[in-house]
Image (cartoon, rainbow, N blue to C red; front, side):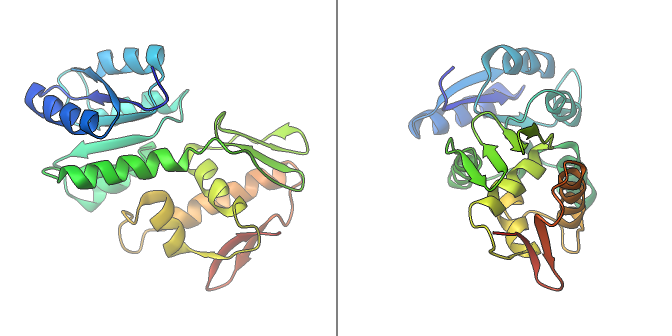
Length: 221
């Protein structure tokens, strides 16, 4: 597969064909799987740049697909769902989905969200002192030791390291990393920041992550 290939996991052939047409017209290569199992096989063998995942699959729930993918892959996952409830949104994000779209949606919104996810996977290596981040390999090292991060922790660190010293508010982090799709009052950002801070401390990265009370977070430049 090319670096711009998108895998659609969708059992409704009509919907899959419409998605494929819209994405192909936008310049993407597209692959399709009509079940969860076929989708997991294609994801493992073909290494797509992004996955569009329907929740209502015939063999097992799309949430299970997200969990299985996250065991060994950081590929961006956009979930397509008709389940428009806060609990469902929180569940999907907690499982490791990067974004979600509520059916029906406009093709322009889909393309915009796809481009945001792919843009976050820039290939430029980033560094600040002993901290180095390789977006292409999804690899972070501190003092030459690997820092094992979840996909969202990686994306947050990539955001902060691009402008060391700049304080990002919780709202800005939510907008950039979750495209503003976090439910109101959610503590997801704080939970991810606490986990990131703990992992940095485990490698003696004390003080790298700065909390500005009442404002937000920054990496010390």
